[in-house]
Figure 1 (tube, one colour):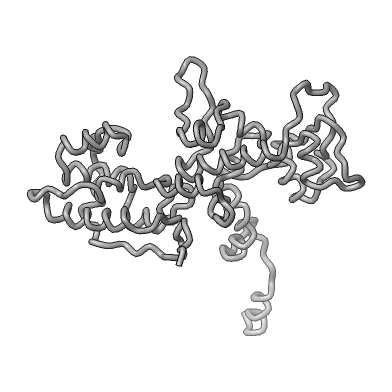
Figure 2: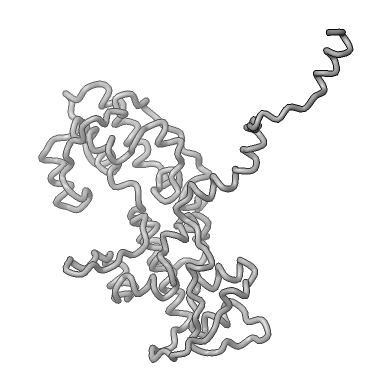
Length: 308
């Protein structure tokens, strides 16, 4: 075979019946699919309940308030508008008119606050009442101070037409505390979600006979407990970096407090509701044994702004 013939072969195109995938190009195409698929939050058009109880004002393009005043669900209508008002699920008046009284904007505002309060202090939306079980425990602040004594789920149903978990809870981080009622601000100061298991480390003295690694870990736990509450620690907005560094916080703190404090002291904290219950050791959880004595929380992640 001549040199020219050898060179010509190199220009032939062979069909091997396979396609070698360029991984970088594939990743660019699949990036958004992966992100959407990894999220348990996300609302589709089919999830929305855009039914109204009467015709909205503000024609030809009613506003969010117009639709809500016409009986629409606040969150559902808000999402529908943010999607560009798709005609496939345009708000329409129900064929069978509702006999329920019209809901005021004040009632809707209170329902939004009710959900916000649960997310900030309990890291969940108001729970549903399960048949045959005890009614959910509602904080006394909501029932007695704020006068919100209705079934917890009624506040969710007032603004959501779908399960609120699909909407997510991260929005609470972006709510400004400017203009909040004094009663609410004072109540939030008593504690937010994610810090209950840190509480013993700012209230109790570590036993003298505790192992050195437990004393070191307790120093870190106390540092976090007395620092300003942080979105890094809050379960709804928790930074994965802290889990990577410290492991599961509640499980490690459970085992750590058993090594640091007496049974009597822990029972006393449980009796006073500082802890839900006396801690019980969890096998296989020992990240705390390698904790350092400190962990840096960014001041930019503080839940409550500085009053300086």
